Amino acid sequence: MKKCIRAARAVTMNGSDNITTDFAMIHDGNRILETGKWSSLKNGFSGEITDLGDVTIAPGLINSHIHLELSHLKDKTVQGKGFMDWVKSLLASPLYELEEKAVRNALQTMLADGTVFCADISTRNCAAIASIMNEMGMGFYAFCEAIGLQIPDAGAKFFPQKDFSTGWAAGAGHALYSTSAQLLQAVKKADNEQKMPFSIHLAENVEEDEAISKGTGDFAELLKGAGMFASCDQKGLTPVQYADSLEILDDLTLAVHCVRVTDEDIETLAQRNVNVCLCPRSNEYIGEGRAPWEKILSSGINTCLGTDSIASNHDLSMWNELEFFLKNVESRLSAYEALALITTNSAKALNIDELYGSLEKGKKAVFATVPPRLDDLLF
Ligand SMILES: [Zn+2]
Image 1 (cartoon, rainbow, N blue to C red):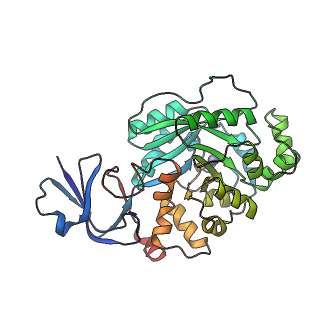
Image 2: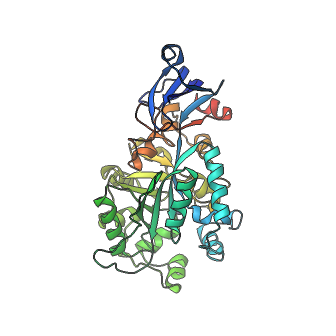
Image 3: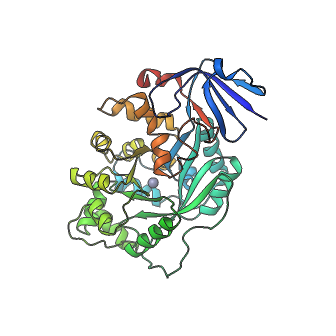
């Protein structure tokens, strides 16, 4: 049976900044059949109508970087003292002991906030978390994160080849300093073969810079002590330059953080058509500074936002993430450009734009309600 959702206003993200008033979206319970003004769609419509009233709706939100595996670590890590203190407090926690209840609670708050899809990174619990997301109706990429110095055998599998109804599993690399070059390249190749996105933490902080360019510093020593330091080439390259030398940067790569990028790095990312996921509140929470947001946006790089895990953020709300970004970014963004960071750009970055990112015919019939507190920032 056909169903209809009505709202006083909608930003459909269908290629323009326009706000449609008297909005209606007709769907079959799964996909959108038609959108437009209720005054013109109502003729001939019969079915169930849900009228949301005096609200503005937008496409369902996408969180492009999260670690649900760490959902039990809220307020358990050091805040604002920089990466070394944060990572030490993280490593002192029961990192990979999956607490299903915490994961379910996290997903529930995300769904209630309007998030309909997330790119989740999991080191040890990829299949279990994928099953929970599937069961709770969250769309997802369940990224199984490769980390360590091992060199994979030919034909090694990096993610479960399983059919889920609401998402997919794919491979991710943790970071350049923690994962062998051969392993990163093998995971990237496996993702590319299936046209799936590949996610990697890149250029997150000053400690990473030194570990990669020189192999020195407290962070490199910490990793060496744990037998986890991927030596990189130590020839003075920036993280982006080193990643580029491994040939893992392309239009299916999602580079997460990109706080420490030079103008040349930004140019490289743009040339390779890499997608960048900024995690503004996570970087602030840890005390890493912030990415050159304005330069990244003006370079034309496809840019989206993620919350990162609750171990480095106050909550998992994409609206709060966008609000923080808009209050601190120095460029003036239109409503379309701002909402794109959590809808259309994210869908493009994750190669799911046939199904998500805008309210248009053929896509998933999912939406989010714009919180009125963002009205002044957006419209
Ligand atoms: Zn992360």
